[in-house]
Image 1: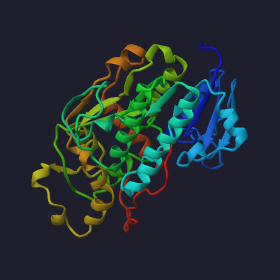
Image 2: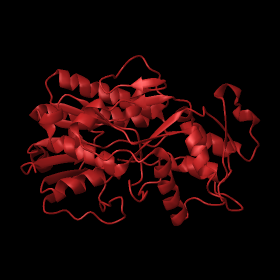
Image 3: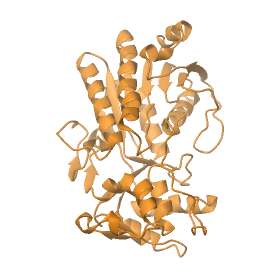
Amino acid sequence: MSDPMTVLVTGASGFVGAEVTARLTAAGHTVLALLHRNGALVRNNGRRLTPGPGSLTRLNGDITRPGLALTDADRRLAATADRIVHCAAVTDFGLPQDRYDRINVEGTRNLLALALAGRTPLVHVSTAYVSGERDGTAREDELDLGQRPGNGYEKSKLAGETLVRQAAADGLPVIVVRPTIVTGATRTGRVRDLKTIYPVLRVLTRGLVRTVPGHHDAVLDLVPVDRVADLVTEAATRFQDAQGHTLHAVGHELTLRDMSDVLAEYPSFHVPRFVPPSAFSASALPDRERPYYDRVVSLYDTYFRRRVHFDDTHAAAFSRRPASSGGRPYLRRLLDHCLATGYLGPAPRKEPAAARHDGSTHR
């Protein structure tokens, strides 16, 4: 166990941030939780976070403003941090680009100013999909290769990570952790935030969109939230062992063929038909399907085109973790949990309009 530290965690109420905060306080560390709004910190299991044997102090702030909008007293407290873990980000798709830029780029810039002022070691949570729309192997030590981002979120995270790399070149101790698609718990499939791939699964399994552009050998990498939180926490507490490295937080690789085969095991599910993107036309979809494609599926369909594998050489050498049990068994656990909660199942007679996520979601 590492000596007790004080860790400033941004996005501490988010999907990943709450789990990191829980792990740090459970290990006896003090967490300064930077929160944009007051409210309970809820873990992935649905329970309120109860710190211990470490401690938790809430700081009200706003990463989009200079100095994080901290009071003088909170700024002095933040300056005592031995580490900073930057989880705060907007991760929803389909938002205006300026919103991504304000939170994911300018927010990172403001956070870096704080870190550089005290030369405080930083663990920055990015995304493996800074690799953009590409096939082949995406390596941990690569960043800007002239790739095309798949959406505004990826564009902003690439820009934010570029700022972090520049700060590292200026002498800031840095570790970057890049999760893939963050999903439910390893053993149970339980998930607090039904985001990322979940709205797509809901639309597809209900038959609300029956034809989708995608390659059967396209690869989705689904990483359990507990695996991401474990790696981020290890990076913060064993910083010297991985300083200067980028760590891919990977999970279970799953091709679209795998996904189709698993969905076919559930009698209540519709199995979508994947067609080559070059043969797909959204305008040819039936009128009843078009809104669901436009508002949900189209936001994610770039992931159905990519034949990408994420190298995790540095992460594997740094962190011990259980071997993958395979994409299909893990997907079954996710689906079983969603069925048990009623999130997935037959479509009602009149499905509510598919709403795009427009809330600021912090990991």
